[in-house]
Every structure is written in C-alpha cells, then in structure tokens.
Length: 198
Figure 1 (cartoon, one colour):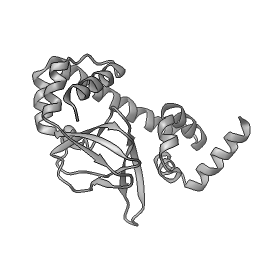
Figure 2 (cartoon, rainbow, N blue to C red; figure 1 turned 45 degrees about the vertical axis):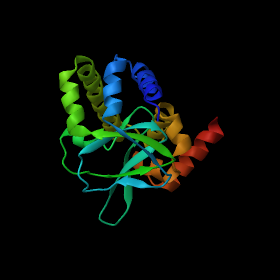
Figure 3 (tube, rainbow, N blue to C red; figure 1 turned 180 degrees about the vertical axis):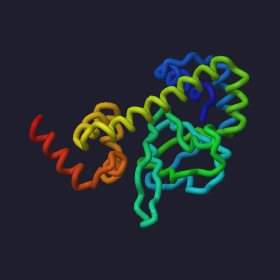
Figure 4 (cartoon, rainbow, N blue to C red; figure 1 turned 135 degrees about the horizontal axis):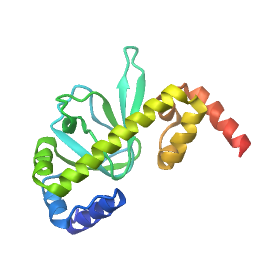
C-alpha cells in the first residue's frame, strides 16, 4: 500500500474521531506496521495467543467472541473501520481472551503493542488520542452494562441498531443476538415486531 495514501486515510480517521495527530506521527506508525487482508470467516487471533501485536481496522468488520464450556460462541464486541482489534496487549494482557474473526473481507494495520505504547507516552498528541480511546472504551462498557441492567431485549436492540447500523447490515443475526444476550429466535421476533410497527 502507498504510504502517502495510508497517512491521508489515517488522518481522516483521526479527524472523524476528533483527535489531532500530525502526518509525521502517522507516518511513523505506518512505518512500524504491517498490513493484512483477512478473508471473510477467517479467525486471525485465538484465545491464548500472545498479545504482542494489536491492530486497527482499515476496512471491513471484525468480531471478537468468547467460547463457553459447551463450545458456544458469545460475541463480546465488533470492530469497524477506524477502531482497534486484537487490543488486549495495549491494556496489559499477555494472552488473548477471545477469538477474533473477520465478518467480511477486512483490512488490518497490525503493529507491536509495546512499541505503540512507547510512542504514545513519548508523543503528547498520541497520548491525548489514547486517553480519548480509553474514555470511549469505558463509556462503551458503562453503556453496555446499563443495557443489561435496565433495558429489555427490544430496547437493547434498538440502541444497538441506532449506534451501529453498519454492523446490523454486515453481521449475522446470531452474532448480534449473542452480543445482546438473547437467542437468535428472540432477535428474529424483535426484528419482525419492529418491522410491523414501522
């Protein structure tokens, strides 16, 4: 991939997320990264894998999920363009807690978590972007907990659909259902009822 193009794309993403990172810093990040196209359905990180690397989704949708004792997968979350994936290493974990799967053809920018954290703490703009990232992660966690504590399944789905329309059209119903903590059949009934109301 062309470095200038990548830097310009990263600058657009940074602006979209209201972070101010200069082209020189983004160029350094591009230089320390490798780029990988992952085909639809491929699992690109497994539970127990070392978390030396982290990634940024440049295109496509990725899903992370847990596997319970009966072998069922439970969606923890989704990563879309401009968001992190395989990010446990950035948060101090030595091993991956979940599986990471491409739900459609997905392009990843992969970098060393340790090297990235070093850059973050040496660069004020990157540090500010990292703080914003942590705040967003905490806000997301609070939002999700709130949904499970005070909303019914229909309300959780309505909020999810509003916040993540691209995931609603790009992810399988069973993946969305496990993310929302409901059975796929229940989600099917919710979607049908909402369609009838619209």
